[in-house]
Image (cartoon, rainbow over all chains, first blue to last red; front, side):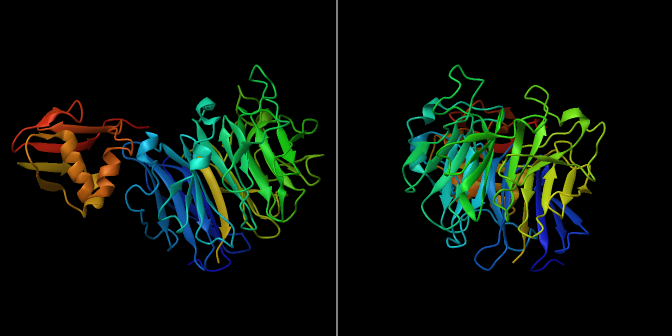
Length: 366
Length: 91
């Protein structure tokens, strides 16, 4: 029986949602699931605001299409919003293919949940995920008709609300780049400094293939970004990006990046060999951590397979809880889930033989 | 005219558990007309058959009697059944 203080890790896979639960010590884990058997779970999150623990899941049936489900009893039962609540307005002529991200806003906005979808668009809910409205400003951005899809589709996969509940908001789109709004309405591309070696113009205004971005809750202007090639940091909410890690990381290609929730200079990446060989380098599964804003990186491998491990992790397959020391969790495309209860110093396998892992989201229950 | 819609098992939870539904619609009736009525009565079924842009989902098959309906314009004869089934596809 789970309760306040327990840790829940949602593991979205290509064949359903699995749930790992543990006490705060994070020593003994239980696996449950699958919910939504057979459906792709590209997005899942535990929303602990407003005095409840609400699970939100973006599931896509190969036959019956996408939907958003919510559960207020930790997955014992699920509800679906009424018809058309996460749907494009008819005048757009567009249809949601997948829900790539479900992101609760700040504690000060307990009803606000953002959804990033494919084709790339941002939706906002003001009622905890019951109904969603299209962000028309981003949809009408003059760049949007020129956005091109990455290998996963034209997806809006990252949403970064203002932790203080203000109007600032940022999103990332593959392969369009990083976009931000300061007033909550007017969007601008914010990719200065991010090189795009796969384009004729190597430093375009937009078109970067941003794989994932994360921020520090206590230092919201500090962002870490994993690009198709290159790990970047910004200290001004995307006003300028500087590459970090090229000297220390075995490869600057990868998908996820996680900012430590307690330490603004600390972040984690999971490098892959290259864009043409998307497995961890040298058959060794290693997480890399910086504690100095990206100036240096250290390999973390205790407890992870170090030979013949040709694994990969997708952009949302790596997450952190909010305990200190930080709990870290990632799932592979071959169905393994690994966890650390000490900020990455040591790891253990929490699950194996699951379907390919698409997303991993952790939370401490309220 | 009366039209009977038979639902795939996966759709029945979104129609209150019903395996089939009866509709009385003014003739002539097209497949699209039936889906409109179905979506109005059971939105959760409707959105699983068609996306919000109006396209029948790629892996959903509609049969009028025993014949696969080529599109929403297909006419449904008097007393015919419209069956909604998942395509033999997936991964």
